[in-house]
Length: 316
Image 1 (spheres, rainbow, N blue to C red):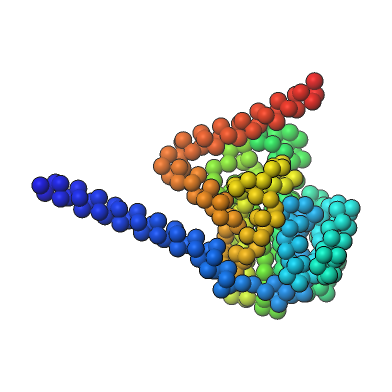
Image 2 (image 1 turned 90 degrees about the horizontal axis):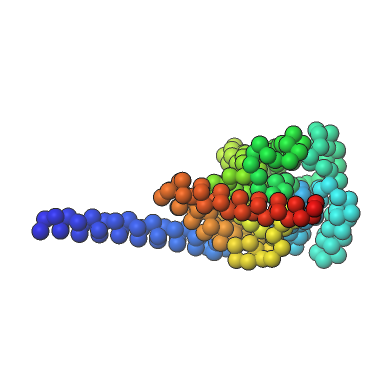
């Protein structure tokens, strides 16, 4: 009888603990995606007349530029292709009746581009910085087998790590002086879940996450809002995904969700289904790390196999 009673008590305690964590998760989701954005809404224009977006002519970066323009900010567009810069600037000016400034810069190049950018933005009141520029692998691949290995490593580090560091150094001092500003750094969900066959890309995005965390700790007291966004799959040129779905939204859908979380969440996937996806992957990892890695590796290997098979057909 006492054993039965003890087991009954254990069952009740376990049920209460599970209920607590479920309620905590639900409340956190409600606050993060509904209550928080409503009460912590950020007036981006009040932070400064201009918003600067890197990697701004396609995908997520372009949508951030459009969303910030819709909120009344003039936009500094920094990217590699002059034709795309001009087209994006024209779209923004025509649609939102704000001013734009274009700066052509290839973030895969050397330090000289930052001297150019510094001169171009001198005197501009930049209240929002979106460090979006970045590159990934062309397809999932094992570390030692990556094509153009030396060039890819150099470009990954320059575009994904150096860019966010140097642009923050260029723009944030004036924000600190004014005691207001917003910095949005685009990382990747690959840095917070197992990511075999994307090893170096995921590692560079882990830098973005940790860098954002430290900058927020150091400068939030100076009135600077810092947010690190860790997206999952989004329809874009970089991901190669063309058809949207619940777990792979369009860039427009993703940014409309993510930008509303500024001021509420310091670190976020930016999109509720991505949060669910990351939590499920990591929950599987907690139960069985080996099974989780096997599952992700198999998925990556399947993607790799399809790309290589297609490449072989084209070369035949």
